Image (cartoon, helix red, strand yellow):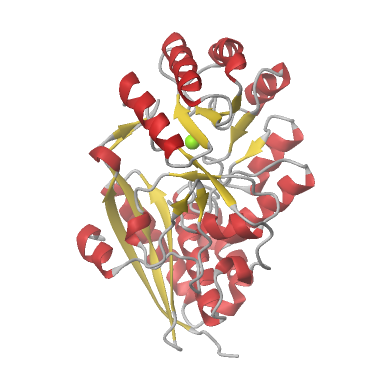
Length: 373
Ligand code: MG
């Protein structure tokens, strides 16, 4: 077996335009998605790519790449990518970093490194990641479309997009809420009437509302059968989520803003979560998200990883992990990769090339690359 000694770690920042050049949810308005990460080279000539996702603010993106190059690279050079589990621990418990950040920039940078290491070992084994993780456990991965549901869309645009998605074969959609309760209730009602009863309809508040607003909204939309209410409340507020979950009005989904296994564990212990939504680009990579998926399986909770095509990795995870049930479709950056995410008839096509699917194309490299300092 080759050693896969790490010879170089090269950070990168790509800023990729979103659909329609601008979108908004209840808390953010963005024009680009940041793909911030690193290429890790090995002595055998196999390179791995990993990245985190950001709202493309160059100043904070450069903090992530600085963390990779200044803090993590010295811990990686000369090590073997085969030892990725040990290296995960080395980075997570690094004396230089544990004190200053067990979440945030250090975790986002760690995500990029961990994914790149998995990419290397999967490529070296000539296997797509899902195979490396033990093989496919399902026949298909159902996609749900979020890119038709932004708050910045007019009511007409929202309904047109929802119907179009269903015509294209999607059996699930998600729309953003979190503006005014009455406006959002009316949009949910109109979308449900437009798409019929057979398509799943989830809603996503992006942490904007307080508990009374969430309860009012959930009561008013219960008849429209929402699959889940995602990030209804402030991301870290376990008690308020537990109260909403206990109301029985709507299933609660969250996780895209949680950095650690411990954070998920607390939501599960408090029965504050029904759908588990970890993100390999937010947590410390595949290594930690697998722990969350296993834990969710133990609690008999379904996993719906955050955006499949915005990490590329969640496609593989969804094929390989029994807890994963459905996967989000937001195709902003899929075209940037040599093995892009594809949806056909409402289902993600199984990726077949070796690795994690995270290798950028030459074109993306040339078109979207930003300065590191
Ligand atoms: Mg969300």
